[in-house]
Length: 170
Image 1 (cartoon, rainbow, N blue to C red):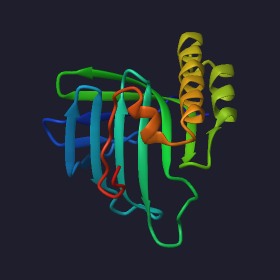
Image 2 (cartoon, rainbow, N blue to C red):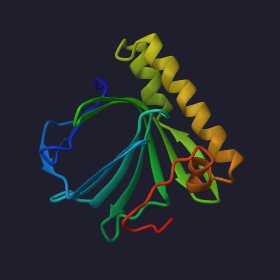
Image 3 (cartoon, one colour):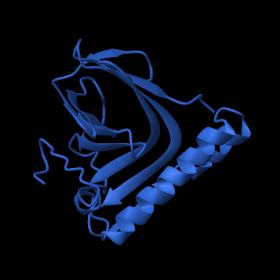
């Protein structure tokens, strides 16, 4: 079992340090009152060509739209990582809490990777407070998505969070 993945987003330098420590150039950052938008290429990745994400600290989620290379498409519209998000000036940091949510717009939403979450808690990689936060965050997100018919835009809009995407026009 791996320790929680951390990622750094440095707006001033226009970089993103991924969980493996690779520093990647970011094509676009936008700071909004509710979070941070990140858009960058995924050079050399075998299945992905681009990633767009919103870090939403108040909700404890990172919402991502993965752009799949031909032949690697997944039946999902958005992917929500359950994370702690901190900010120090222009530097944002996420710490992953293993639980994720796959959203298929107006069809369904599902929590995944519960096995990783349980193993991380059992192995002492996720302390009890972080584990409780992760569970509460995933419950709130699933409840909100269910309440709004598995429509991410509608759920977030009800919280006065309006996201934009390069590919999805909301």
